[in-house]
Length: 124
Image (cartoon, rainbow, N blue to C red; front, side):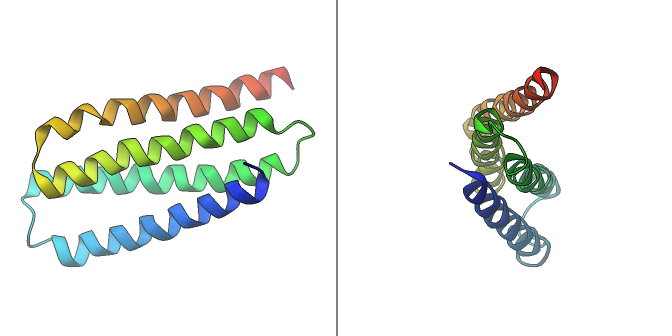
């Protein structure tokens, strides 16, 4: 993965986040129960926040000499979107509660990505 890959993934994630958000607001609003809709919206929120994070990491990777740790942080954010938001989308749409067991793994991936970024900044 390089700077352009991170920027591309970030752009794709933002596109999908907006599209899924609009789909939820228009197509799912009347079909999902209120608690299911809240779960779906949480997935959208984290999806979009970390999509922006991917774009910013892509920009940062282009500014640093050794971008390997920034790129690693990006992979963790991407995995977090897939695991965290993806599991929340699946849970809200299917009602299968066991899918919620995947969500914390996505949360850990988000935390790992941000922790790697912090460690990289501290090391200068």
